[in-house]
Length: 425
Ligand code: AMP
Ligand code: GLY
Image (cartoon, rainbow, N blue to C red; front, side, top):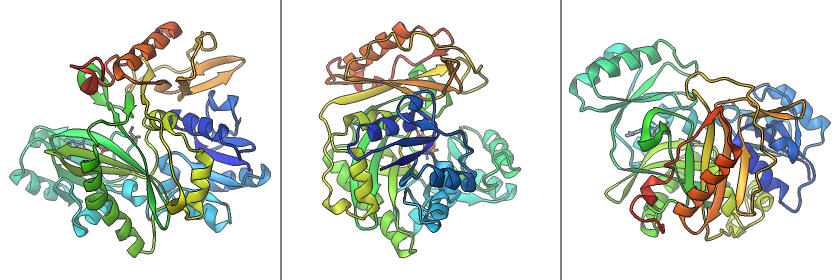
């Protein structure tokens, strides 16, 4: 069976590797992929938002199934388009993707269905913002309604700051939407819970904790994610029951009632406060870099799970996981998430010996004339697995040091919450 994989990040390299290891997979085609996927698959240079072009490649390469990694093509309706053209595709449709594509949609769904989340106000103009800011507590969270590539959320300490962030959004800083959400600031510990969902059922697909800030000690601006680990120890059985009952089930039921049942991976972004889960965000895909720590722990054949989901057979599917823990550290181009240089050669990549417990996933890389060059802000994800987060992190850092890439930087404190006082964790 020939598979098409849409996307080009570390998440897609991890998905590609899992597919490559699956029994039923014939050829894999990545749209457009990166230097890492080019070793396992055929990369196809194409604008993934040009649906017609994507379809023409699907036809010419006789691709049997398409799996979509990133949010933008999902939110823009690639699934609906391909299904109409009778292509088998895994991912949520345009309506269901509004869970990520419109924070106003997601928050209204929570309100109607009593799903625990921060209190909020949707604003369409400056006077609505100003009136709300006159009576709210600070800090307040200002969120752009539409997709914003991880840059749409600002935690504001004063009215002045909140007003200026809001005005920029209202003026159209993000092309996806001019609306914004003012949201109560929730204090607690963040964790992510993943599911795979079909029309009839859903199955657990791992937990993880991400590190969004660029610098150590969680300082500096937000990024797409500087590192992650799985499982997230804070999500115990009791909390999991609450997540399913109070958040997941009412959400999936609400979408079913709208005749748009959810299909695909669902990323539930949570704040845990006093043992209670609050929904911070939904993402309609696997996380990046969370996928790079979850897939190395998967025991069951990946393609088999996806095929079962497409046929609405998840209720008959048993998904098995390794007990081992997993961590990834993201190696970034110096300057990220601000301005950074591209096309910097990464030498030594073939010289670092990895064991079966280590994984080197490419993100922003490209191969040119036999060299591997950086091509983005987040460049490589070094993942390792084992029994102790402390030792896994040590191992990853030793691999990065062997790589010795002078144009890159990384956080050495990934997992600090689980490692801080207990080296055996
Ligand atoms: P989002 O894109 O909604 O996940 O927001 C990005 C990040 O902003 C989250 O991972 C949190 O760290 C933070 N954040 C978002 N909403 C809130 C909130 N209501 N209270 C506190 N922090 C938040
Ligand atoms: N790592 C956060 C995300 O994938 O949205």
